[in-house]
Image (cartoon, rainbow, N blue to C red; front, side, top):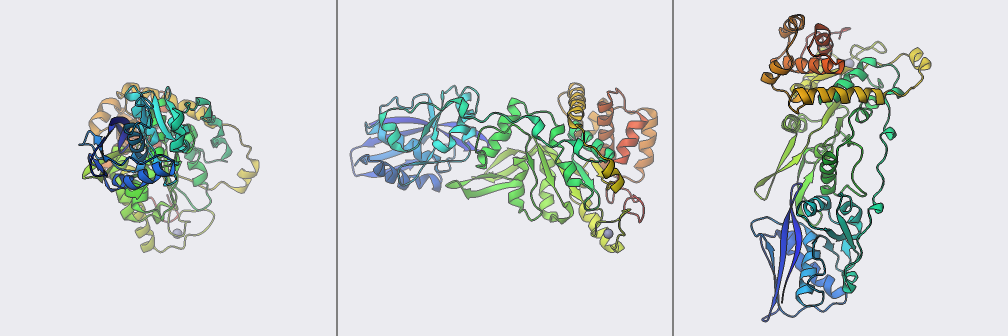
Length: 510
Ligand SMILES: [Zn+2]
């Protein structure tokens, strides 16, 4: 009276094969789960027993031991309910031993015997493909997600009784929604004027640079930021699976895979855990919850009104924005979630919003201005390569404006510049170059380095490195082999960070 059903243990995004072994022996009736289960898995006993009985099956009056192997891998969450119930009914001879052979089984059970959707199914589907299994047996609500990994099958289970007459037929791939086309994303051509800001975003897109949009209220910062995703190259298959797996883990992937690059814009009241992720209770157990930062993986994280975010929250972004990963402690081990994003901040130049403005006078006193700028510049200043000034367009300009498609051409240039970088830099974008690599891959012309030395007196060394990287990206957009004085001039113009250059923020200047 023994059975084995295969399932998956999740650690962060990674799914690993788990054997759910069930043995029924004579003796005092009991129900024990061993193999490093956490409380949420131990609670499966109550749900599984109730679901089996509610579905009309007889609960075996035996000593039931469930072993989740390998025992060294921690197991969490309610999604072992379904494999455990299947294992018990198979060991009891109700289901045939080969019922779900070749499939990995995940799913929660309700007391009524019906299945309930679980987060993280995409990671399980990726695991099934990697391990050469046919696919997944999942709750009906998870079927689109489970079927979205190319080549994988997904068998929907509505209630335990569905399985009494054999395995239901796998869902067809046509149940997965078709990918939306890129042209559904907003176009830069809808924005009047702002040539310099558009160019800045193009540079950020091409080189993988983080940037800050700085301008008075109503100058169009949000409108510009929302147009960044369309400048980025389409997700390749790996990027799509990885980004989608994060959304699956957060329980936010309702249909099939993500096709557009994510664009996340959390409000400044967001908690640190919601922004960078954490270990929390949800989905029937303690599990890793990806934050906005990981949900933006392979896409854009946009923080509007950056100056309103608490410094403690911004501080937590420092490390991940550099490394492209978030580390979350869980079960005493560090779970790593991916977080490679284009970070875009937006802020007013001062508390009242009109410092340096031509439309209204700034009413901030010098002390308030300094405090604001140091907060803005504070924790993230050295992570941001480009500060992009956004100035409002005049009513005359707006009246004369006719929108015309622009993003597709910009995206083409971005793609070409990316190609150049990846080939020259050995697979990394300019933003990720270290100082030594900059020497090697971005040599400056004599004139360019004179210009940079002039700036060096006012800037931090980090600011200089940023300017060099940005100049390299501008040269790549230009198709140039070397960084010239003109490229450096443009890069310097994007380096007017608050606090970085004393001319910035001076009354009437900037
Ligand atoms: Zn002001």
